[in-house]
Length: 334
Image (cartoon, rainbow, N blue to C red; front, side, top):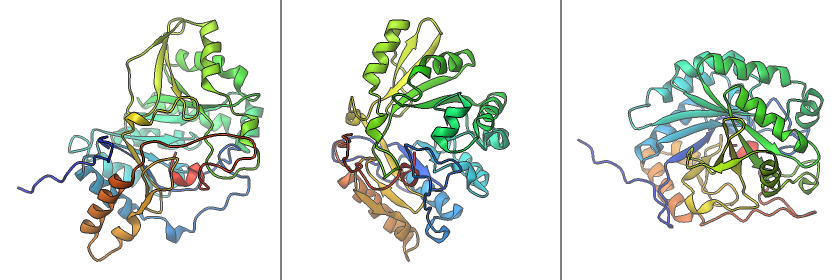
């Protein structure tokens, strides 16, 4: 019987059990706070094959990763992505406790049944507005009806849906209570997210940065919010809303740093492991996978990642300031 491999524990004694694995940097939307209209995506030769993504995931599971979230870009635009989902789904109960996915929802109605059949039980869907004109303005695409059909299909397939909403001052700010009510009426949780300063975009993010401290204060004037002990494995902190009977999460990278309990690492579609979303520290796992001794090189790479993972990110948002990192969220993995 082989000796179990050492778990992933960083220099600050944080156990790393959660991998966000990007399968593509490509997306079929062009959300203005995420990327420029004329986004240049990676050459396909630079992106890991599905077989390489599978091998990489297995290597992480052997080192104690218990939750994998597939991300992008938009993961469901990756050709044959369901084959990877099925392969990883076979590890559920055999080292892997949860397999999930974050999607913009545009392709979801075509994949919901297959995702559920492969073992996925819950997904995150990005939804910043239910106003068709504003959706088209924010995403530069007229796809709201596709997203809403995808959410309905996911619910019909038995998937638990959590909606992710980026709070944007002067854009969807007034709509946030309606989005929460709609989500809770349909049995969904909703998590609000502060805009993150990653990658150069066509506008100044400070124009629409909305601190969630202000949003929460506004919601408390409308509803009774009670702090919840529920944790999803990510950075969100939740409240229960008495009047709607649902739950709202807050992800606050700028107004309330949450790094002390970080259990996450991210790997891009090119196999670059980023030890911190807001940091430049990285390890090239693609080179490890394509080396003469991939198992040994991968082990070395993961050990290095634990040594270089920083204590916290240093996000800030100031007018005219450069983004925290030049890479876009679509490259890093949402």
